[in-house]
Length: 149
Image (cartoon, rainbow, N blue to C red; front, side):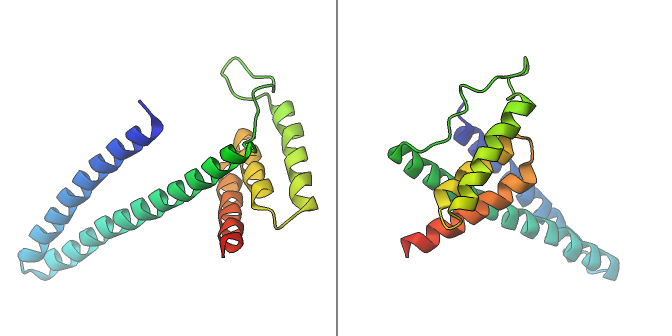
């Protein structure tokens, strides 16, 4: 199953769950008791938070996909196929670190280049640092958006 189809399926399942949760919140609100109303308001906040998270995640994914397609069209997508791998399939840590150092040097040489930031985010990802990979990809998205204006 393609990643996009899986994401759509999981989003649909989450939407069903959020609708059911919202219906529980409405039922609590309809009790009319102070406790029921307080719990209903609290439970109703959860689906609102869930919707916000889904929207932000999908929006980010679509922006990253747009950058990926543009880099692919330019022939600039990161290629790690030649890096040594562990039996698990992950890139060897020393090789990932060396590749990361190259990508960091690219960013230091041209800090306004979103393509270099995209590749650095990918380097963080293969090194296993997901938090920094996301932050770096947000920087790439910001720079690309500024470039389009």
